[in-house]
Length: 191
Image (tube, rainbow, N blue to C red):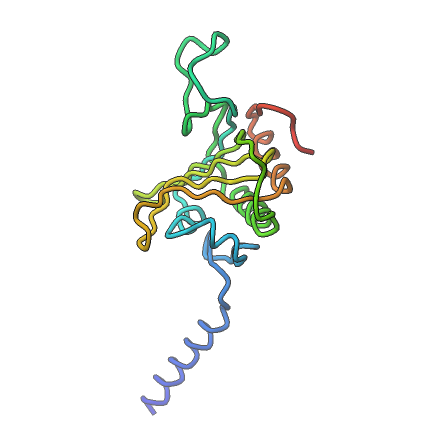
């Protein structure tokens, strides 16, 4: 009798585990829509995806796409920089908005062309931290490209960055979060 109860409990546990499916798990253990796409796996190597989807801190940044030294119109103090790009504003993104941003980003990456345009003018950034790990995304919807910085790939320890194309489709979701929290944007808003 005891063996039967233990066997049934194990069988029920395996069945419940098996019914979860193989979709990636993200925020609060829920599947991330679009996260199962092949191209998302190419972009988010190593533990970068886990850092993004289960971040303790997840910030959206509005960036000035021009790099370089301080300009005369800059404020008296040196403006904050994010990978050499001037930060116009940043906000800690609540869980529900993170979900929308990642869903839009994953869909754009999954549908993106094999190559983006030659320009590089990122106006959006994501800074995600989980424990001691940090992953940053620089996103240029004009040239439809995403650059990931902070990769840790055991198979390729020298690889720290990766760039892949996306579409312009996620830009309205990113702009909506900027607007929601009153952050400025360099360039036109996506509708």
